Length: 354
Image (cartoon, rainbow, N blue to C red; front, side, top):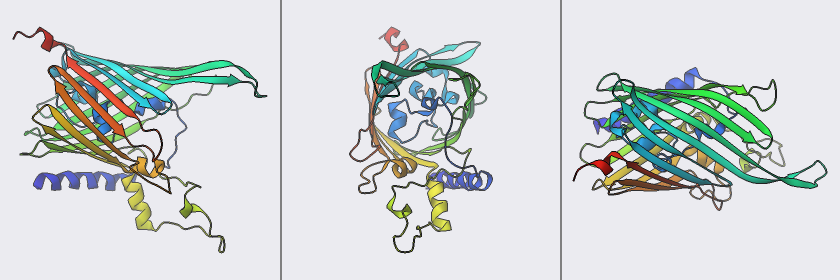
């Protein structure tokens, strides 16, 4: 009970400080948004796009380089996501060097498919495609038994029809692990970078910078771990006015629109930063995972039918040397919901003597 109280006390403090210090409005006018997409099935299953956990899972290291350790040496992972009209994923490999440290390289990709091309009059002139790529080199190092640091260096290439762009970015992260290894806390600054070659000359766009904090707590006598992720801490107000929301439409008699009270607006903004999740592991070979993302639910639900928008459910299965994960995320009631597949293996296990 003490651990859970500490877990939620820290999370409340984080958001309280954030609400007082940050007042930027929501909205994005940047580029390379695919960098913040969730790639790993395990990460997607608990609702966020990174995990604050140090359990030698290489699929977590792409988004959180501070959990890269020597135990990931020779780990190989593939991930694929069927996401609405786009398909994306990565291939990743980790290796440790005695002097240089622990590294994890990944090729991240997204394909938006093929499109029909037409001129201003509507005459079809052909087809075109769109895709983006990022080459990630991650590095992690322990400063002590409790603190790890890490960083990602990214080379980014984007090809959208005849428009081309090239950029660079880095992620900087740190993770604290308690002595009993059941509590973890991570701080990440994502996508600090620059668009070197813009799509159009002179129009340099900002990258999708994020500040994130994550907490995880594992119960001492039950194989159950809770996650709490705080996203977009660089700005407080993530809300927007949706004209399709019945509550935002003017009263036909008075002409006035309904507005939220101060407490209701604060609570709504607060929850838009929070992602909740959990996973339970059975016999060390099977895991069931569940996540809830309040912001996704508010932005993707239908006002006539909310359904399971914002919820995600997944599982993990270990078969001999292979770790297989699958997640189904509910983005919209009645719409196409993404499927996440991830396979990871440590190649060193193939060479071990029986």
